Length: 143
Image (cartoon, rainbow, N blue to C red):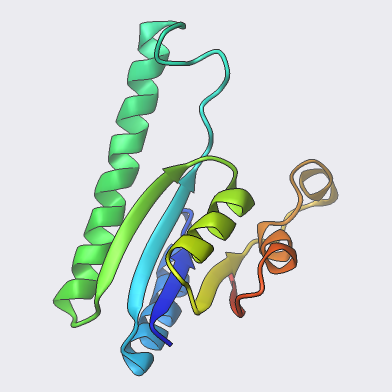
């Protein structure tokens, strides 16, 4: 095992998922890819059209995510784990699947959130969709 991808949402449960992924990376001497998928840009907020204040708010939000991810990877590196962080815009399952292939991932670690019927109906479940769309072993961590 050479590459482990851990998907983080930067909310509650991130520490638990990262701890388990870090333990796996340490045990297998694998590189740890810490990946956060940010929501895709709304259609009306492009780089050419749309209110400037919305683009500025989005840029500030993404910079904050980037700083958090960098800190997470730096902390792992300081503890002897080869770690790198990625911030990607787009659909969660599609982007995770693409990165899994591009980075030659051997194991995916992802958290599981309990959602109600309405959320599942409209948004699905990331962990289930990921398992259905990739052949890579996936470790699901309950939050």
